[in-house]
Length: 255
Length: 121
Image: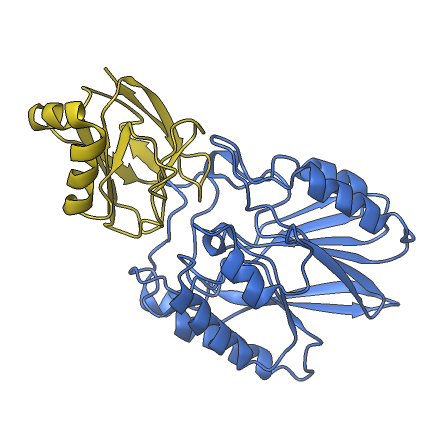
């Protein structure tokens, strides 16, 4: 399962109860006929990186009783470069915050593109992380399915709103020799997809609030909807892998 | 944070008493000018600093007000002029006194495409 952008601590009109909608997302996952192997959270667990937000998020997420792997969003690393986030949610990470693991024949890579922002630029991975990624992928055969998770889109969706990763193309260059690559992103609170050769890139719905489509309106702020419509634009993503069939992805709203 | 702060820039986010104390001890000349300068305000609205370029007289206090439903920060883009706000939630404010002439570029460390400049004359 992938969940994203839970924004615990968000209080504005677009969703006064992000705790409730995160819980609802986890309830959906719990009702699935087959228990997922684990959960991937693609960042913005909290809204303001406050200790009490991390506490609340941790308590709600733990209640799912699922193994989980996290990458931070820019909202999770405000003021402390992710110190609280990594201590709580990514103990397996390398000192830079990135990490990889294998499950059921699939190689999973967790990348960080929300740190060390430069003024006027978009998200970035940095030379050190790209060198690590190269080394991490090198010994693996092209037939290994690869799933990459990162908060900000690894491709350029709308750089004017920061919906891009400056050196994302370099990471995708290292991935293109693999036969099946799935890139899971968050950040933009809606599903946008792109396929480049064997690489399929997908952003996810949020569990907290929707954002406008790229370039629509004045900015990428939270979108206010009628209360009965909110659940239809929040959701989670199911990822199924069968060696014979490959990866299958299903979007499920909270409605 | 205090030790790393340039003497030229006086943080007011911790409250008036703290700001006044620093102003009196570190930048006495600026404190005198402060009385003359009209405070300036920069709105943070729709993921932008408004106005993006603000020209002020030395000693002016600048206050950023976050009018977005999204948190933002105000962080100096130049290492030699360090200033940094905490995360500003909706309606939160951050104030600084710019005591010395110069060009102060800054950005939002959460949304790095948001940039602004203060020109102090």
